[in-house]
Image (cartoon, rainbow, N blue to C red; front, side, top):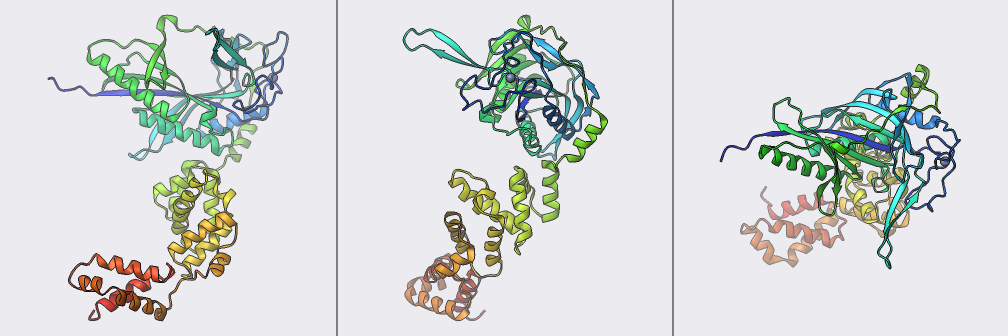
Length: 489
Ligand SMILES: [Zn+2]
Protein backbone atom coordinates (compact mmCIF):
# COMPACT_ATOMS: atom_id res chain seq x y z
CA UNK A 1 0.00 0.00 0.00
CA UNK A 2 1.39 3.46 -0.85
CA UNK A 3 1.96 5.70 2.18
CA UNK A 4 -1.03 7.77 3.15
CA UNK A 5 -0.65 11.37 2.00
CA UNK A 6 -0.94 14.14 4.52
CA UNK A 7 -3.75 16.61 4.06
CA UNK A 8 -4.60 19.86 5.73
CA UNK A 9 -8.03 21.26 6.43
CA UNK A 10 -8.76 24.92 5.76
CA UNK A 11 -11.59 26.39 7.81
CA UNK A 12 -13.23 29.80 7.87
CA UNK A 13 -16.16 30.66 10.12
CA UNK A 14 -19.11 33.00 9.85
CA UNK A 15 -20.69 33.72 13.19
CA UNK A 16 -24.12 35.26 13.64
CA UNK A 17 -24.73 36.76 17.06
CA UNK A 18 -27.91 38.45 18.20
CA UNK A 19 -27.34 41.76 19.95
CA UNK A 20 -29.21 41.88 23.25
CA UNK A 21 -30.60 45.37 22.73
CA UNK A 22 -33.95 46.33 24.28
CA UNK A 23 -35.59 46.88 20.88
CA UNK A 24 -35.13 45.49 17.36
CA UNK A 25 -32.67 46.74 14.70
CA UNK A 26 -35.03 48.97 12.69
CA UNK A 27 -38.22 49.33 14.76
CA UNK A 28 -39.33 49.84 18.36
CA UNK A 29 -40.54 46.27 18.98
CA UNK A 30 -39.07 44.73 22.14
CA UNK A 31 -36.58 41.87 21.85
CA UNK A 32 -38.25 38.94 23.63
CA UNK A 33 -37.15 35.44 24.55
CA UNK A 34 -38.15 33.55 21.41
CA UNK A 35 -38.24 30.24 23.21
CA UNK A 36 -40.91 31.32 25.72
CA UNK A 37 -42.83 34.37 24.37
CA UNK A 38 -46.20 33.79 22.70
CA UNK A 39 -45.67 33.81 18.90
CA UNK A 40 -46.14 37.09 17.00
CA UNK A 41 -46.55 39.24 20.11
CA UNK A 42 -43.52 41.47 19.46
CA UNK A 43 -44.33 42.50 15.89
CA UNK A 44 -45.15 45.79 14.14
CA UNK A 45 -45.66 46.93 10.53
CA UNK A 46 -41.89 47.49 10.09
CA UNK A 47 -40.67 44.04 11.12
CA UNK A 48 -43.61 42.26 9.50
CA UNK A 49 -42.76 43.88 6.15
CA UNK A 50 -45.85 46.00 5.55
CA UNK A 51 -45.63 48.32 2.54
CA UNK A 52 -44.97 52.00 3.07
CA UNK A 53 -43.08 51.76 6.39
CA UNK A 54 -39.58 53.06 7.00
CA UNK A 55 -36.77 51.52 9.05
CA UNK A 56 -34.81 53.52 11.64
CA UNK A 57 -31.38 52.35 12.81
CA UNK A 58 -31.06 51.31 16.48
CA UNK A 59 -28.19 53.37 17.93
CA UNK A 60 -27.57 50.89 20.76
CA UNK A 61 -27.11 48.08 18.22
CA UNK A 62 -24.47 50.15 16.40
CA UNK A 63 -22.72 50.82 19.72
CA UNK A 64 -22.74 47.09 20.55
CA UNK A 65 -21.35 46.29 17.10
CA UNK A 66 -18.60 48.87 17.67
CA UNK A 67 -17.71 47.25 20.99
CA UNK A 68 -17.28 43.86 19.31
CA UNK A 69 -15.41 45.27 16.32
CA UNK A 70 -13.00 47.19 18.57
CA UNK A 71 -12.48 44.19 20.86
CA UNK A 72 -11.50 42.26 17.71
CA UNK A 73 -9.08 45.07 16.79
CA UNK A 74 -10.94 45.92 13.58
CA UNK A 75 -10.65 49.12 11.58
CA UNK A 76 -13.98 50.96 11.82
CA UNK A 77 -15.41 52.53 8.66
CA UNK A 78 -16.52 56.09 9.26
CA UNK A 79 -19.23 55.52 6.65
CA UNK A 80 -20.83 52.14 6.04
CA UNK A 81 -23.80 51.31 3.85
CA UNK A 82 -26.83 49.12 4.52
CA UNK A 83 -27.76 46.91 1.59
CA UNK A 84 -30.71 44.77 0.61
CA UNK A 85 -30.06 41.06 0.32
CA UNK A 86 -32.94 39.79 -1.80
CA UNK A 87 -34.38 36.31 -1.46
CA UNK A 88 -37.70 34.73 -0.79
CA UNK A 89 -38.42 32.58 2.23
CA UNK A 90 -41.52 32.39 4.43
CA UNK A 91 -39.61 33.62 7.50
CA UNK A 92 -38.58 36.81 5.66
CA UNK A 93 -41.75 38.89 5.20
CA UNK A 94 -40.14 41.78 3.27
CA UNK A 95 -38.61 39.49 0.65
CA UNK A 96 -35.20 40.94 1.52
CA UNK A 97 -32.95 41.22 4.53
CA UNK A 98 -31.28 44.52 5.40
CA UNK A 99 -27.58 43.75 5.76
CA UNK A 100 -24.25 45.33 4.87
CA UNK A 101 -22.36 44.17 1.80
CA UNK A 102 -19.70 46.17 -0.02
CA UNK A 103 -19.15 48.67 2.78
CA UNK A 104 -19.33 46.92 6.16
CA UNK A 105 -19.03 48.64 9.53
CA UNK A 106 -15.63 47.12 10.34
CA UNK A 107 -12.83 45.14 8.68
CA UNK A 108 -9.37 43.66 9.22
CA UNK A 109 -9.53 42.50 12.82
CA UNK A 110 -7.84 39.64 14.63
CA UNK A 111 -8.39 37.23 17.45
CA UNK A 112 -5.68 35.13 19.07
CA UNK A 113 -7.20 31.88 20.26
CA UNK A 114 -5.66 29.85 23.05
CA UNK A 115 -3.97 26.66 21.85
CA UNK A 116 -1.42 24.19 23.15
CA UNK A 117 1.18 25.81 20.92
CA UNK A 118 0.62 29.07 22.79
CA UNK A 119 -1.96 30.76 20.60
CA UNK A 120 -3.18 30.78 17.01
CA UNK A 121 -3.99 33.97 15.15
CA UNK A 122 -7.30 34.11 13.29
CA UNK A 123 -7.79 37.17 11.10
CA UNK A 124 -11.26 38.69 11.12
CA UNK A 125 -12.27 39.76 7.61
CA UNK A 126 -15.32 41.81 8.53
CA UNK A 127 -17.94 42.63 11.14
CA UNK A 128 -21.27 43.97 9.96
CA UNK A 129 -24.81 44.63 11.17
CA UNK A 130 -27.96 43.08 9.80
CA UNK A 131 -31.38 41.91 10.93
CA UNK A 132 -32.53 38.45 11.92
CA UNK A 133 -35.33 36.55 10.18
CA UNK A 134 -38.51 35.15 11.70
CA UNK A 135 -38.78 31.55 12.84
CA UNK A 136 -40.54 28.62 11.20
CA UNK A 137 -41.89 25.62 13.05
CA UNK A 138 -42.64 22.62 10.85
CA UNK A 139 -45.50 20.36 11.92
CA UNK A 140 -47.39 17.32 10.74
CA UNK A 141 -51.13 17.07 11.25
CA UNK A 142 -51.58 13.84 13.26
CA UNK A 143 -54.89 13.04 11.57
CA UNK A 144 -54.35 13.88 7.91
CA UNK A 145 -50.58 13.44 7.88
CA UNK A 146 -50.29 16.76 6.06
CA UNK A 147 -47.26 18.89 6.84
CA UNK A 148 -47.49 22.59 7.47
CA UNK A 149 -45.33 25.40 8.85
CA UNK A 150 -46.03 28.02 11.50
CA UNK A 151 -44.47 31.48 11.18
CA UNK A 152 -43.36 33.44 14.26
CA UNK A 153 -42.08 36.96 13.55
CA UNK A 154 -40.96 37.79 17.11
CA UNK A 155 -37.33 37.33 15.97
CA UNK A 156 -37.84 39.16 12.66
CA UNK A 157 -35.76 42.34 12.69
CA UNK A 158 -33.70 41.60 15.79
CA UNK A 159 -30.21 43.14 15.49
CA UNK A 160 -27.73 40.56 14.29
CA UNK A 161 -23.97 40.86 14.07
CA UNK A 162 -22.11 38.86 11.45
CA UNK A 163 -18.46 38.18 12.16
CA UNK A 164 -16.55 36.64 9.25
CA UNK A 165 -13.10 35.13 9.72
CA UNK A 166 -10.41 34.49 7.15
CA UNK A 167 -9.81 30.78 6.46
CA UNK A 168 -7.11 30.63 9.16
CA UNK A 169 -8.18 27.58 11.16
CA UNK A 170 -6.68 24.16 10.49
CA UNK A 171 -8.71 21.77 12.63
CA UNK A 172 -12.18 21.27 14.04
CA UNK A 173 -10.76 21.81 17.53
CA UNK A 174 -9.28 25.17 16.50
CA UNK A 175 -12.60 26.23 14.99
CA UNK A 176 -14.31 25.34 18.24
CA UNK A 177 -11.74 27.25 20.28
CA UNK A 178 -12.30 30.29 18.05
CA UNK A 179 -16.08 30.02 18.50
CA UNK A 180 -15.71 29.69 22.27
CA UNK A 181 -13.28 32.63 22.46
CA UNK A 182 -15.74 34.78 20.49
CA UNK A 183 -18.59 33.77 22.77
CA UNK A 184 -16.55 34.72 25.84
CA UNK A 185 -15.79 38.14 24.35
CA UNK A 186 -19.45 38.79 23.44
CA UNK A 187 -20.49 37.91 26.99
CA UNK A 188 -17.76 40.09 28.51
CA UNK A 189 -18.95 42.99 26.35
CA UNK A 190 -22.53 42.42 27.52
CA UNK A 191 -23.86 42.30 23.95
CA UNK A 192 -24.96 38.66 23.79
CA UNK A 193 -26.05 36.17 26.46
CA UNK A 194 -24.11 33.32 24.85
CA UNK A 195 -27.11 31.09 25.45
CA UNK A 196 -26.49 28.64 22.60
CA UNK A 197 -29.61 26.61 23.26
CA UNK A 198 -31.71 29.67 22.49
CA UNK A 199 -29.91 30.13 19.18
CA UNK A 200 -28.45 33.54 20.04
CA UNK A 201 -25.18 32.46 18.39
CA UNK A 202 -25.08 30.45 15.16
CA UNK A 203 -22.15 29.27 13.06
CA UNK A 204 -21.48 28.56 9.42
CA UNK A 205 -18.24 26.86 8.48
CA UNK A 206 -16.43 26.90 5.14
CA UNK A 207 -14.34 23.77 4.85
CA UNK A 208 -11.88 22.61 2.20
CA UNK A 209 -9.08 20.08 2.20
CA UNK A 210 -5.77 20.07 0.30
CA UNK A 211 -2.49 18.15 0.32
CA UNK A 212 -0.40 19.48 3.21
CA UNK A 213 2.06 22.16 2.18
CA UNK A 214 0.41 22.99 -1.15
CA UNK A 215 -1.16 26.37 -1.79
CA UNK A 216 -3.77 24.92 -4.09
CA UNK A 217 -7.30 25.92 -3.13
CA UNK A 218 -9.86 23.19 -3.46
CA UNK A 219 -13.58 23.69 -3.74
CA UNK A 220 -15.03 24.63 -0.42
CA UNK A 221 -18.13 23.30 1.21
CA UNK A 222 -20.30 25.56 3.32
CA UNK A 223 -21.90 23.98 6.40
CA UNK A 224 -25.01 25.92 7.45
CA UNK A 225 -26.81 26.44 10.76
CA UNK A 226 -24.51 24.98 13.38
CA UNK A 227 -26.07 25.86 16.71
CA UNK A 228 -23.71 24.30 19.25
CA UNK A 229 -19.96 23.93 19.70
CA UNK A 230 -20.38 20.18 19.57
CA UNK A 231 -22.21 20.34 16.24
CA UNK A 232 -19.60 22.80 14.93
CA UNK A 233 -16.70 20.54 15.85
CA UNK A 234 -18.27 17.30 14.67
CA UNK A 235 -19.62 18.69 11.41
CA UNK A 236 -16.21 20.09 10.45
CA UNK A 237 -14.42 16.86 11.40
CA UNK A 238 -16.94 14.83 9.40
CA UNK A 239 -16.73 17.11 6.37
CA UNK A 240 -12.91 17.17 6.40
CA UNK A 241 -12.82 13.37 6.49
CA UNK A 242 -15.39 13.09 3.67
CA UNK A 243 -13.40 15.46 1.45
CA UNK A 244 -10.14 13.67 2.25
CA UNK A 245 -11.68 10.39 1.09
CA UNK A 246 -12.80 12.03 -2.18
CA UNK A 247 -9.30 13.40 -2.84
CA UNK A 248 -7.74 10.03 -1.93
CA UNK A 249 -9.95 8.45 -4.59
CA UNK A 250 -8.53 10.91 -7.13
CA UNK A 251 -11.78 12.81 -7.50
CA UNK A 252 -12.75 16.43 -7.05
CA UNK A 253 -14.78 17.84 -4.19
CA UNK A 254 -17.88 19.59 -5.46
CA UNK A 255 -18.63 23.11 -4.27
CA UNK A 256 -21.86 22.92 -2.33
CA UNK A 257 -23.85 23.96 0.70
CA UNK A 258 -24.63 21.32 3.27
CA UNK A 259 -26.49 21.05 6.55
CA UNK A 260 -25.58 19.04 9.64
CA UNK A 261 -27.86 16.13 10.48
CA UNK A 262 -27.51 15.80 14.25
CA UNK A 263 -29.30 12.45 14.45
CA UNK A 264 -27.27 10.82 11.65
CA UNK A 265 -24.05 12.69 12.63
CA UNK A 266 -23.33 13.53 8.99
CA UNK A 267 -23.56 16.44 6.57
CA UNK A 268 -26.39 16.46 3.99
CA UNK A 269 -26.41 18.34 0.71
CA UNK A 270 -28.73 21.35 0.60
CA UNK A 271 -27.70 22.83 -2.74
CA UNK A 272 -24.90 22.58 -5.29
CA UNK A 273 -22.98 25.36 -7.02
CA UNK A 274 -25.47 25.50 -9.90
CA UNK A 275 -28.24 26.39 -7.48
CA UNK A 276 -26.22 29.03 -5.64
CA UNK A 277 -28.17 32.12 -4.64
CA UNK A 278 -27.80 35.41 -6.41
CA UNK A 279 -28.95 37.88 -3.78
CA UNK A 280 -28.94 40.90 -6.13
CA UNK A 281 -27.56 43.16 -3.42
CA UNK A 282 -28.14 46.90 -3.78
CA UNK A 283 -27.87 49.83 -1.33
CA UNK A 284 -30.89 50.11 0.94
CA UNK A 285 -32.80 53.16 -0.39
CA UNK A 286 -34.73 53.67 2.87
CA UNK A 287 -31.65 54.22 5.04
CA UNK A 288 -28.96 56.91 4.83
CA UNK A 289 -25.30 55.84 5.03
CA UNK A 290 -24.34 54.91 8.59
CA UNK A 291 -21.86 57.51 9.83
CA UNK A 292 -19.79 56.74 12.92
CA UNK A 293 -17.77 59.70 14.16
CA UNK A 294 -14.17 59.17 15.34
CA UNK A 295 -15.25 60.63 18.72
CA UNK A 296 -17.91 57.94 19.10
CA UNK A 297 -15.39 55.22 18.25
CA UNK A 298 -12.93 56.59 20.82
CA UNK A 299 -15.65 56.80 23.47
CA UNK A 300 -16.57 53.15 22.90
CA UNK A 301 -12.92 52.11 22.83
CA UNK A 302 -12.34 53.81 26.19
CA UNK A 303 -15.36 52.03 27.70
CA UNK A 304 -14.25 48.50 26.76
CA UNK A 305 -13.81 46.22 29.77
CA UNK A 306 -10.75 44.06 30.34
CA UNK A 307 -11.15 41.19 27.84
CA UNK A 308 -10.99 37.47 28.75
CA UNK A 309 -7.46 36.76 27.49
CA UNK A 310 -6.03 39.82 29.21
CA UNK A 311 -7.81 38.94 32.45
CA UNK A 312 -6.51 35.38 32.31
CA UNK A 313 -2.91 36.54 31.84
CA UNK A 314 -3.31 39.05 34.68
CA UNK A 315 -4.67 36.36 37.02
CA UNK A 316 -1.63 34.19 36.26
CA UNK A 317 0.74 37.08 36.86
CA UNK A 318 -0.92 38.93 39.75
CA UNK A 319 -2.19 35.97 41.79
CA UNK A 320 0.33 33.32 40.74
CA UNK A 321 -2.37 31.01 39.39
CA UNK A 322 -1.71 28.14 36.98
CA UNK A 323 -3.03 28.82 33.44
CA UNK A 324 -5.86 26.30 33.73
CA UNK A 325 -7.22 27.80 36.95
CA UNK A 326 -6.90 31.32 35.56
CA UNK A 327 -8.83 30.27 32.44
CA UNK A 328 -11.57 28.69 34.52
CA UNK A 329 -11.97 31.84 36.61
CA UNK A 330 -11.87 34.17 33.60
CA UNK A 331 -14.55 32.21 31.73
CA UNK A 332 -17.39 34.35 33.14
CA UNK A 333 -16.95 38.00 34.13
CA UNK A 334 -19.11 37.45 37.24
CA UNK A 335 -16.91 34.54 38.41
CA UNK A 336 -13.77 36.56 37.76
CA UNK A 337 -15.09 39.47 39.82
CA UNK A 338 -16.14 37.09 42.59
CA UNK A 339 -12.66 35.59 42.71
CA UNK A 340 -11.00 39.00 42.98
CA UNK A 341 -13.30 40.08 45.81
CA UNK A 342 -12.60 36.77 47.57
CA UNK A 343 -8.85 36.98 47.07
CA UNK A 344 -8.72 40.50 48.50
CA UNK A 345 -11.03 39.73 51.42
CA UNK A 346 -9.28 36.61 52.73
CA UNK A 347 -5.97 36.21 54.52
CA UNK A 348 -5.48 32.89 52.72
CA UNK A 349 -3.20 32.84 49.66
CA UNK A 350 -4.93 33.75 46.35
CA UNK A 351 -4.03 30.33 45.02
CA UNK A 352 -5.81 28.69 47.98
CA UNK A 353 -8.85 30.91 47.39
CA UNK A 354 -8.85 30.00 43.67
CA UNK A 355 -8.62 26.28 44.47
CA UNK A 356 -11.49 26.43 46.97
CA UNK A 357 -13.62 28.42 44.54
CA UNK A 358 -13.03 26.23 41.47
CA UNK A 359 -12.96 23.02 43.51
CA UNK A 360 -15.29 22.76 46.51
CA UNK A 361 -17.66 25.64 45.75
CA UNK A 362 -18.06 24.88 42.02
CA UNK A 363 -18.76 21.23 42.86
CA UNK A 364 -21.41 22.15 45.44
CA UNK A 365 -23.02 24.67 43.07
CA UNK A 366 -23.04 22.16 40.20
CA UNK A 367 -24.87 19.73 42.45
CA UNK A 368 -27.37 22.52 43.13
CA UNK A 369 -28.22 23.05 39.43
CA UNK A 370 -25.29 25.38 38.81
CA UNK A 371 -26.24 28.76 40.23
CA UNK A 372 -23.61 31.54 40.18
CA UNK A 373 -21.25 31.86 43.19
CA UNK A 374 -22.28 35.48 43.82
CA UNK A 375 -25.94 34.50 44.09
CA UNK A 376 -25.26 31.63 46.47
CA UNK A 377 -22.62 32.87 48.87
CA UNK A 378 -21.28 36.40 49.42
CA UNK A 379 -17.55 36.45 48.67
CA UNK A 380 -16.90 38.03 52.10
CA UNK A 381 -18.61 35.12 53.88
CA UNK A 382 -16.53 32.63 51.88
CA UNK A 383 -13.43 34.65 52.74
CA UNK A 384 -14.24 34.36 56.47
CA UNK A 385 -14.38 30.56 56.11
CA UNK A 386 -11.00 30.49 54.36
CA UNK A 387 -9.61 32.67 57.16
CA UNK A 388 -10.65 30.08 59.78
CA UNK A 389 -8.85 27.46 57.72
CA UNK A 390 -5.82 29.69 57.27
CA UNK A 391 -5.63 30.36 61.03
CA UNK A 392 -5.77 26.65 61.74
CA UNK A 393 -9.06 26.97 63.64
CA UNK A 394 -10.61 24.26 61.42
CA UNK A 395 -9.11 21.67 59.11
CA UNK A 396 -9.80 21.01 55.41
CA UNK A 397 -12.50 18.40 55.93
CA UNK A 398 -14.35 20.54 58.45
CA UNK A 399 -14.12 23.52 56.09
CA UNK A 400 -15.79 21.48 53.35
CA UNK A 401 -18.68 20.45 55.54
CA UNK A 402 -19.06 24.00 56.92
CA UNK A 403 -19.12 25.36 53.35
CA UNK A 404 -21.95 23.01 52.49
CA UNK A 405 -23.89 24.13 55.56
CA UNK A 406 -23.26 27.81 54.80
CA UNK A 407 -24.87 27.34 51.38
CA UNK A 408 -27.86 25.59 52.89
CA UNK A 409 -28.45 27.82 55.94
CA UNK A 410 -26.83 31.14 55.05
CA UNK A 411 -25.15 31.19 58.49
CA UNK A 412 -21.60 32.50 58.91
CA UNK A 413 -18.69 30.06 59.05
CA UNK A 414 -17.84 30.99 62.64
CA UNK A 415 -21.45 30.54 63.84
CA UNK A 416 -21.54 27.01 62.39
CA UNK A 417 -18.11 26.11 63.78
CA UNK A 418 -19.02 27.31 67.29
CA UNK A 419 -22.53 25.82 67.31
CA UNK A 420 -21.34 22.41 66.16
CA UNK A 421 -18.13 22.52 68.20
CA UNK A 422 -15.98 21.98 65.12
CA UNK A 423 -12.84 23.78 66.21
CA UNK A 424 -9.77 21.90 65.10
CA UNK A 425 -8.01 20.00 67.85
CA UNK A 426 -4.40 21.14 67.64
CA UNK A 427 -3.80 20.68 71.33
CA UNK A 428 -1.06 18.03 71.45
CA UNK A 429 -2.29 16.45 74.70
CA UNK A 430 -5.77 15.89 73.28
CA UNK A 431 -4.44 14.46 70.01
CA UNK A 432 -1.90 12.32 71.89
CA UNK A 433 -4.71 10.85 73.99
CA UNK A 434 -6.59 9.92 70.82
CA UNK A 435 -3.42 8.35 69.35
CA UNK A 436 -2.90 6.25 72.50
CA UNK A 437 -6.51 5.08 72.45
CA UNK A 438 -6.29 4.01 68.77
CA UNK A 439 -2.97 2.18 69.21
CA UNK A 440 -4.32 0.35 72.23
CA UNK A 441 -7.46 -0.67 70.34
CA UNK A 442 -5.55 -2.04 67.30
CA UNK A 443 -2.56 -4.02 68.59
CA UNK A 444 -2.58 -6.40 65.60
CA UNK A 445 -2.36 -3.58 63.04
CA UNK A 446 0.39 -1.90 65.06
CA UNK A 447 2.38 -5.15 65.06
CA UNK A 448 1.89 -5.65 61.33
CA UNK A 449 2.94 -2.07 60.68
CA UNK A 450 6.09 -2.57 62.71
CA UNK A 451 6.71 -5.78 60.74
CA UNK A 452 6.87 -3.72 57.54
CA UNK A 453 3.30 -3.30 56.30
CA UNK A 454 3.71 0.45 55.91
CA UNK A 455 0.28 1.02 54.27
CA UNK A 456 -1.30 0.51 57.70
CA UNK A 457 -0.14 3.98 58.72
CA UNK A 458 -3.05 5.36 56.65
CA UNK A 459 -5.44 3.12 58.50
CA UNK A 460 -4.18 4.24 61.91
CA UNK A 461 -4.22 7.88 60.81
CA UNK A 462 -7.85 7.46 59.69
CA UNK A 463 -8.78 5.93 63.03
CA UNK A 464 -7.30 8.87 64.96
CA UNK A 465 -9.20 11.32 62.74
CA UNK A 466 -12.34 9.32 63.38
CA UNK A 467 -11.69 9.27 67.12
CA UNK A 468 -11.52 13.10 67.03
CA UNK A 469 -14.63 13.35 64.84
CA UNK A 470 -12.50 14.61 61.97
CA UNK A 471 -11.46 17.69 63.92
CA UNK A 472 -7.84 16.90 64.74
CA UNK A 473 -5.16 18.89 62.97
CA UNK A 474 -3.91 16.30 60.44
CA UNK A 475 -0.32 17.55 60.73
CA UNK A 476 -0.31 17.08 64.50
CA UNK A 477 -1.84 13.59 64.10
CA UNK A 478 0.81 12.62 61.57
CA UNK A 479 3.62 13.94 63.75
CA UNK A 480 2.43 12.25 66.96
CA UNK A 481 1.70 8.93 65.23
CA UNK A 482 5.18 8.89 63.72
CA UNK A 483 6.79 9.78 67.02
CA UNK A 484 4.87 7.03 68.81
CA UNK A 485 5.53 4.35 66.18
CA UNK A 486 9.15 5.28 65.59
CA UNK A 487 10.36 6.33 69.04
CA UNK A 488 14.01 6.15 67.95
CA UNK A 489 13.81 8.74 65.16
ZN1 LIG B 1 -41.32 45.78 14.84
